[in-house]
Length: 467
Image (cartoon, rainbow, N blue to C red):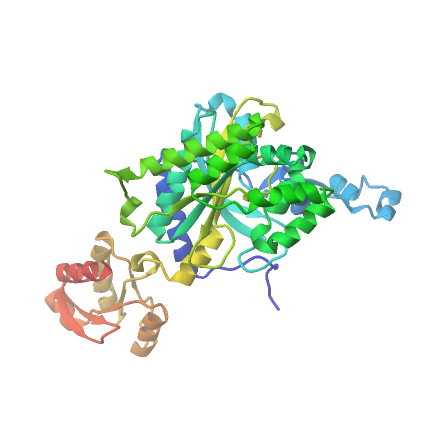
């Protein structure tokens, strides 16, 4: 029986129309903010990918066997050892990209002489992770990234938050935009006397929403933190209040940490500048006419697991659907240094198109015209009638209306069933009478009403219905 790998999906025409609505909306917003599109190969050298996502990330890389006789250089002793990691390094030189950020960093290094810095790029392509499939988590999925490299300005972070706000307002999805800073997390690790455990701390507290405070504390204890250190961490994890109150409190806690205070001030600038950009006459102005603005919230438990973040980090959660993060990102000051090009700062975000798709489905937020296919089907009564119908739908198409002619002179029932199956809202009859009068009889498939119209009136009627 035919099947597809777990964690992958087929998409029907209706589903593709919905996905294209997502991609096109994000693409249009990126362009509004001056970002340019690039693409990179699905395959990257494993040397490009390995070591960039932490130990857990390396395990989730899909590795691709070398072509040809890939066992020819492997000895019998090596095969008998069954050392999968060692064998993989010999058998596989390439892998499917895990995300779009590392390939982008490689792109910047390879094309540095061609780029005008700061370079603002966006990229909408699939990525692959050998993860356990579950609701909202797939092995093959699309990311929609935007990054700025070659500028240290925090205005880039502000602009990315504006992009997030604009995109989700256009979608009609209420979201909470969470922000933190890896410098704050480093300061917290210093404060509790566990600076050497910064990775363990961030990995653990990043799971707070999923596993709860007790399990986070247990994981920290297993990672070697003392009960005293864990106890000292608790008030910070549970910190509440407004963004300003939380910033003031954590600034006092981290007053002896230069790194931590720098992170606090970076967050303060991003939050205050973002909020100021949305105010007019003292009143918050939602972008694009939304009913209420999306909230930007400081969350000191936000860590994001990827090792390359060095400054501000972001995550977006939908407020009306239970699902994981639907957008994330952050600042990565040293990523291109891994490829021999130090000193290039970058910051970026990534929209999770597949999770956004699930949210829009759950809330039924797709605009009618974004998922509607053919708007008009011309019935085929025979050779002469079909020729007239073709001239009619040619004019209809020139007016921007999606139309098609049934290709065969089949029984009426079969042609009408085709229209119903494709949810085509209107059917056009072009028989001998219509040909003689240069008209079309239009049937509304929802109401059953039939009207004889001139071609121009037909176009007007179809356009009015599409609005």
